[in-house]
Length: 445
Image 1 (cartoon, rainbow, N blue to C red):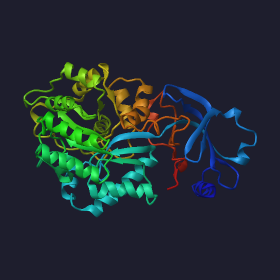
Image 2 (cartoon, helix red, strand yellow):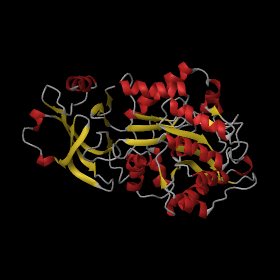
Image 3 (cartoon, rainbow, N blue to C red):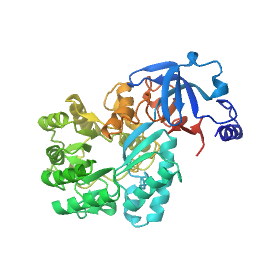
Image 4 (tube, rainbow, N blue to C red):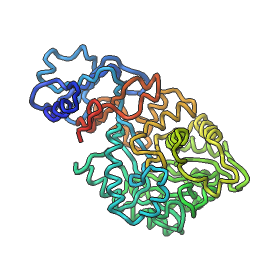
């Protein structure tokens, strides 16, 4: 590894920053001017993260390192960067293109497994090299999602630690039917959940309402009643996994809360009445908080889309027919998200990777939007992107913070994202599972 790193750095005309013995060691020290503390609330300055094999063994002052450390260990002196845990993203569609044509391509290529797989391979490499070391994919063809997960696990391709739901569950012609399992009755839904479990799903994705990405689906209307969603929750719990539900309407949110779905995706409050905007319900939101349900606000890819349009690029897509008569502003949606958050609802980091302009290397845009659109402080946004989402996914004992005993997934960013959240974008250096996969903007995988 060491010789490979140095050769690649030299060939890129960069100064090597790896110092140590000629023989790769199982012990590494990663030194940075700023290292996030275990709680993700402040910086530790001029600190070193000790890695033994794939785990974080200690976090200590760089000045306290042994005098012979460079003779016994591999030492990375990253300098003026901010070192945080690898980002955790809970909302990905690995084989969607993330272009303005994402919807048309999803329909045209729905059965082209080879093309979808090749796109997914590229997307997952982009994600991990950007510093997103854990991803939950909650809506891709089974033939792609499970194969990509296994290939990453086997080391055949680079990619993040991957949790997959595989094919989402939807009604006939419902949201994302073109890569979904179409199930109309409660019995159909139960069978669909069991089929995903049989294939090794880490979570279940179900479409509780229609969606903007699907012309034949109405985002204002529920697709499943609460008792059918509860069947999905029950069947998933039988195998110890959770359910994430897409919901864009007030009635869809209420059904998800009634069914105690673990993770609400979007959690928008569109009225069934096309002449109206939102119908936010405080009591439902309060119950959501009391039940410990997580919300994925998916505000980052919308921000990226607007910024692309402002640069003169084509808009992501036409306004969906069901909301065209009363297209709710981003500011109105932000207000309801803040109301939920103020009531105690906790948010996950989810870019909705693969949707128009939501490229797989821009997970950090969610944190930007939390600060710039919702008014959060930067450390709250950083926690959402790391330790909070790890907790929501049930893997916070493994990843999400720089703490002794956790997996050594680390991402170093230029600048100080606690001062300017946009300093967290694509990572300069990435360590995954204790292995250096990107160093000083040079990809090693």
